[in-house]
Length: 211
Ligand code: GAR
Image 1 (tube, rainbow, N blue to C red):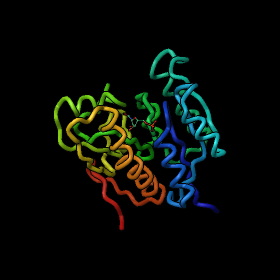
Image 2: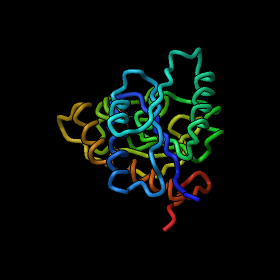
Image 3: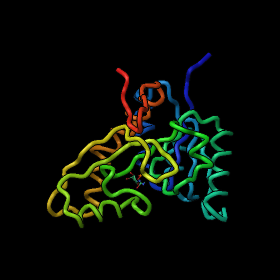
Image 4: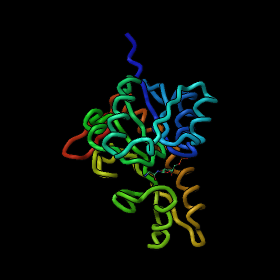
């Protein structure tokens, strides 16, 4: 019996984090995990092309085809069950799913967020806006966080974080690029591997990594 875990990656845009996962997989760095399917909330997401270029199954589940978040979440839950997802990764996935999904995949879904949670996170904080707000505040350090997904946006237990320096003259775009390169593309594959290899313990809302 194989202990391979099906990783389903949820995307909405360019998919550079998906690419980091694909590259990590080709280097043998996802442990027991294998990317089995990519599901996009947008039909024209470039992430879908990245998946197809690498022979990975794709599906689209368009947010605006559903009346509300509850019906979209139920459709996503059914798709994830159909794909036999063991691990679900939000990689630039811009829709908040409700407890219909979260309750079906407790401690199996993770998200990468482009800031050091609890800063610049929660509903409305996504993509470039996160970096705009960080620059507006004048923080000297920002970074990225990988955390478990719960029904409360960006509030699940933190798995990994990496700090990145903010420079004078940064624009949201330059800061986003540095955070992706130095933090997101590194800690997301690491966290996926830890989860696939059952190395993460959660106790009292905090995570611990088994040695
Ligand atoms: C990434 O910076 C990711 O952390 C962020 O959107 C970008 C997607 O890029 N996600 C969020 O803001 C979610 N709250 P990608 O499509 O190239 O991976």
